[in-house]
Image (tube, rainbow, N blue to C red; front, side, top):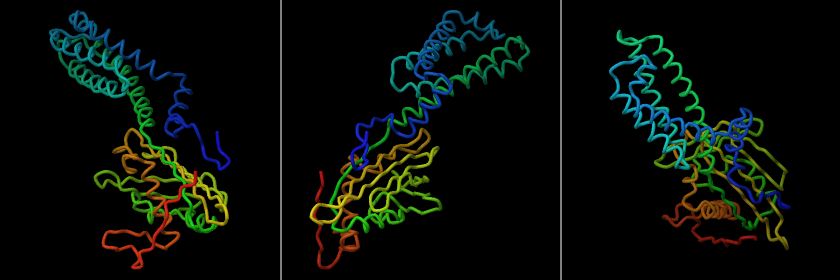
Length: 319
């Protein structure tokens, strides 16, 4: 649902770009990853019990001999993984543990296939069976990891009155290369062709986080919206509406930004915004207000960016 100014309301984490992509892939394959994970959990417990109770039988199936102690140890590992998958909401972590266990099994079977005291045909069959389960483990773990990552996101919304006309505010905002002037977490933004731009942010521990974005909606002097490209390690969407303030008092700026990260990202991009994303975006809007109204961001650290006259501004929030 949208308001008259085009801002979305009632959005949940599932509306995030990463979640949309993951949901689409699941639908195309006709798979419910949570159910697959649950099935793998029960499979892991069943296999673990079999390895623990009847290790010799399992050894015969894969063409091994005199490996009962090792198979029992693998059984305990399988049971632990199965219980973890079934009893936690973070199933992806336990599935990745299963993948590591599968890798150990494959290495053991490969060594067994080279030994003289094994039934090579049964061992090769065992390798093929474990490889098939490994592929399923990796597929399910990777998708659940993306789903978990999609939930790690931050939404920030803020409104403010700027004592400048909408045309001037829009023109400044439309040049994304101006963003680092008032968004402290950004190192640089470089405009590319066809509404594309390249963003560089300073992450936790001075880690550089980069992504590309494109303009999704551009209504001159009224609205601007952008979104990171699909497949980015970081996803980021933003929109800003420019509305004439009553009695010619300038422009009401309405900003909304969403931040998230993929499974492989170094850390939640939400940390770039601080512990309170909305408080942080309000701070950035105040900096934007200073730039628009005074030409620079006013600081108190040695007055390096402020004016000698000590210009002031008012935090007016339009609600």
